[in-house]
Image (tube, rainbow, N blue to C red; front, side, top):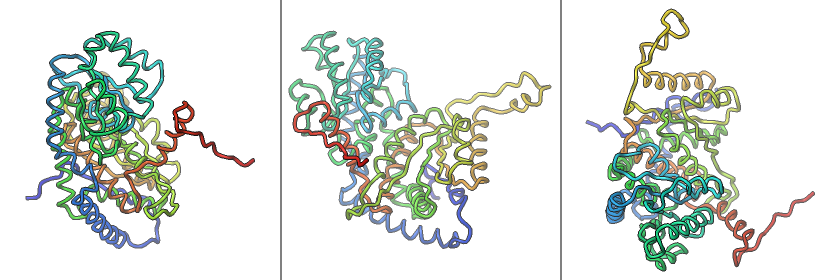
Length: 451
């Protein structure tokens, strides 16, 4: 008996709006499946050659044990963990915590450092009791100004609260194992550290100590998160392309991009718990796939624009655009088969037809109907959509979803022939900022605009 996959991808509506007169759908799918089998072979070759670091994250047992041990120690001694990071250094942890926390007995977790807004920082300082707080600075290099500037300020306030000698016990750095500015600071101060694997980029690091340490501090079972990731990985390895969720997701979006110029990717989970997951996906999809050059240096300007939406909320703010605006979007829903809690609706006015029909349902029934109604409306307007269904909001499902999209990105890199693991467009902005703030060795290269 074939085991049901943790994540089911229904792509039956992804060809809505397909132009008439094009090649038969059967022929188009046959060609796509053939290409995806080649993509899978190449991705697995890179996995065996250990060229794709994130594939091995669920198996890093020594890092997992160190993460669990340190988190357990801190839960016994402190009340709050402040995660200081930006982008890949905190979006994964935010997504995990929003979906699965809080857990009884876990630390309260705060996030800061993704912005240098002084009002946000000041508000956090007013909330914190630094004597019962641990600072978790997350940065592979330690050169990123947003989290490091916030860390230096919070470190200063922590020293004032508990003293210079004691403060080191309340700082944990998640950083490169061997090098970088933050690693040097840790060696000077004696801070405890957890590793960011050298071969795992920030936006792929949610299933490393970057995302797992805050989750473990909050009391979440991180082994179950990794179990879900392994389930999706094993399914990807075993399933043929025609039944392979991550491959089909990548392939169908590639087809929509190349054949129909649908370059905007909307991710719309129908669950409040997955709101922050959309922001994690947004970085992964944008930063990985937005590339000026292909692998041989040709100028291509490839890329998808991801949109983080939320059902049913955005049925009342964005769906008008999706249904009647430009034909440049695909929509992917995430549906939760069974919610952790449910409630019956109430119908206090049975004599009023406009109110009476609300009764006799559960709230989960309503949100499922809203998702299906949106998909039907989009299809009737020739707008493509697909649905990822997970059994429920659980550590396994969150780990599985993260690995699903990471594999999809790796597959898309092969389809587009681009490097999905670098970010030269980000580095250019970082260099300009260093020059503006007077860092030694950086000069501002301002663009010359012709008038």
